[in-house]
Image 1 (cartoon, rainbow, N blue to C red):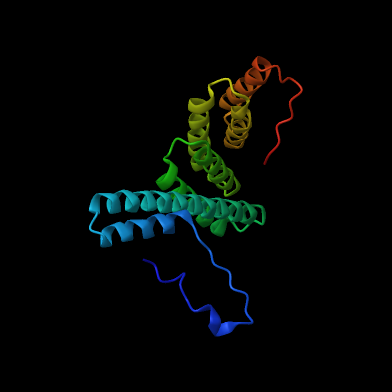
Image 2 (image 1 turned 90 degrees about the vertical axis):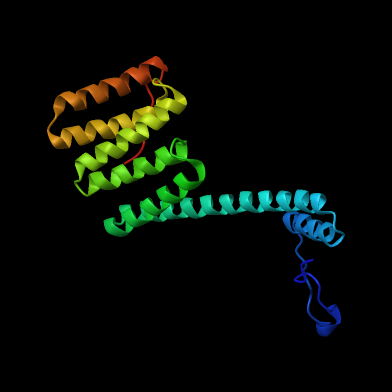
Length: 193
């Protein structure tokens, strides 16, 4: 049983002692007691429950770390520190892909941010690749006519304008307009950039 929670309180009478207990530690302790009692099946059951909780908590913490990398990357992008922004956004993407897979709205959002960075770096082909991957993920999740696609379509159109391909830019703008009309959002304001 974990010894970290057990200590003599009388050593420092003037200090306030705060004990922290959590379910995953208690389940682990129960598993250890069953192990000492040679009830291995029960020990295994509680050990697995403890492990499952700890893994879940670890993933939640890692996703928060990934979100922090994303936020730092976006701030660096706006401050024109593009190399550091790219490192942070890539780190965010790698952590998120490992934990939630590659077809999740958070992945699409990070890809969108990476695409905006690539556009800022004038790496238009990489920008298009990332915008299109973000668009595809969101279209698969929300549907081809969902307003969530409009912002990315406008960014894609903007990249095509910068590349001098007005025909592809026009198609992206028209698709964005069509989605807004389909969803009766003709007065909708799309923010970003």
